Amino acid sequence: MTTTKTSETEALRADLELTRRHLAETVQELSRQLNVPRRMKESAASAGHRAVHAAGSMAGTARGRAAQAAGTARGRAVQAAGTARGRAVEVAGTAGERAKDGARNLPAVAKQVPTVVKQAPVTVREHPKAAAAVGGAVALGVGAAAWIVGRGK
Image (cartoon, rainbow, N blue to C red; front, side):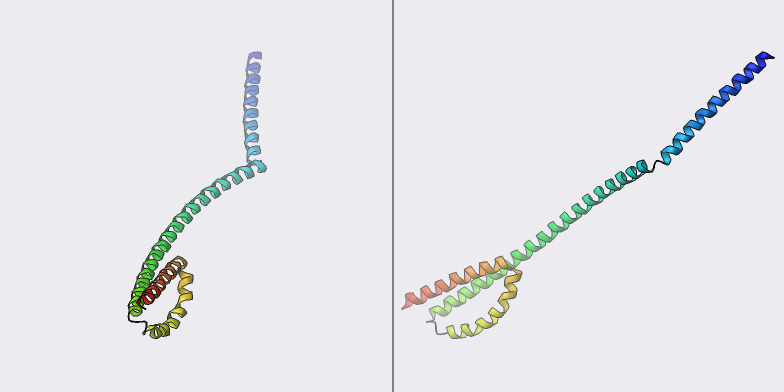
């Protein structure tokens, strides 16, 4: 009977040890789940990674849209400069022809200037580089017209 008691005692001790281990693992898992500071750090790290990813995505989108806007603005500026150049050539040609006619038509051109001058501030604000190009072309045209008129005297 002693062997039976011994084997029962050993079985109970083994069962008790197994229960202790299981209980220790359960307590450890519960303490891990209840470790609020650690869970907060993990949540903060996860949120930080998501924020970095979102910021990178938004930055890429912003760069793309900025490049697209710059391309559109460049196209419009090139188009406005071409238009301004054409107008400048036209005005310079007209002024040159009128200057050749002895400058008798200059008062009529002077009457048209106020209309153009009223439109200039809007155009200059919208297209400053084109306005500078037109100003240079006009100055060149006026200089050429004055030279032609002075040469004819």
